[in-house]
Image (tube, rainbow, N blue to C red; front, side, top):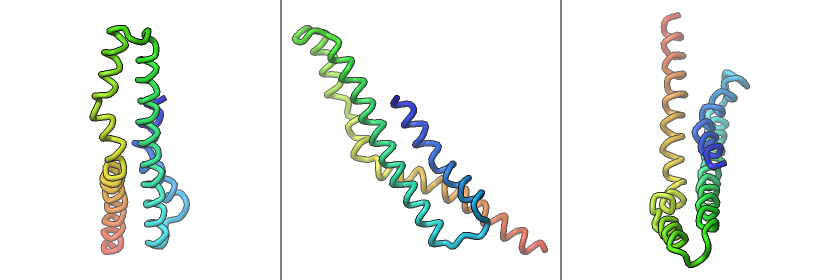
Amino acid sequence: MPTLFLTAWLACPLLTWAAMLGLKRRMSLGVVWVVCLTSVIVGVVLLANYVWALDAELLAEVDKYEPGTPEAQRASEEWASDTDRSFLLVSSPMLTAVWYGAVYVLLFGVQRIVRRMLLTAI
């Protein structure tokens, strides 16, 4: 389940870009900004759900051991000391904004440059 959320998070800007290309060639800049910001919010939610699904899997791993056994303590310590997972939940808005921003600048910027080149060539 966590990989589904991560895949959706990675694919969301590409799907948004493809949908905007398919809808209309000439959209106002305001509509493009609103759609991009909405997809960033969706991306933050997807990344947060990824972390929560990962937590659920890790907690299920801890719960499969008998409480108080060395294996349960080791699994519980591994879950508690996973700072990457904990920090990802806090940094997900910034990470999503950077990733989606880079993808959108690349996709929309290239499209705009090609359009300008074609207009000047005519």
